[in-house]
Image (cartoon, rainbow, N blue to C red; front, side, top):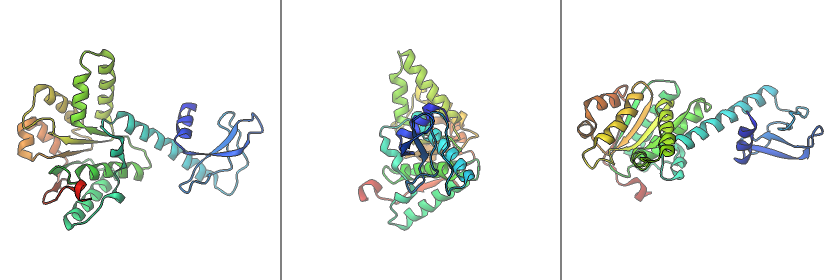
Length: 273
């Protein structure tokens, strides 16, 4: 971990700061926080590297936790910097705050857990969450993404893409070399991430598409053809074929056997909850 990563982690509250100072250089001593908020070691100096004598915690455990925190910082930074979204609150979605009130919601919840488990086990799969607006598709898709990151010890890089927002950013970047360069760099990372959620595919189309929209979608689907991807959409398969073409539909449905979730016969999840 370099000093920039250290200060990022410190500012995010991942470190416990001791009151006493380093006897070598006078800098404050810090330690990674455990999940209970308590320090995981007796402290170290981020300036000179001084290590206070170890206490009860096993050194190997401290090392494991140190690298886990470093991986987590990298994975969260990747997720927040590469993703395309309209509100940061979208990342608050978790399995444990998905409200199950009906048998259908329980079925979808269990299916999403199954998709996550297979991704954690490094299965190559595509999954399409299809159904009406507000039925919980985005909530469960992001829950899968968060669950995979946590259960793999943040060894994977993941991104969330609101496709309609990505298209808008792409159009707004026309005429600005710097904006186009930055967005192209973001899209390149999206194409190569370990897991990608493409949200609300087809919402931009109103039943039809332009060559511009099609080119952007095709570039992503081609790059993700043999990489894990989750897609949420209000469209059925025949409508996806009409808008994005047979080749893109084939790419979307590749590796999707038994992985697709159908959100039918549901009221608006956001309203009822």
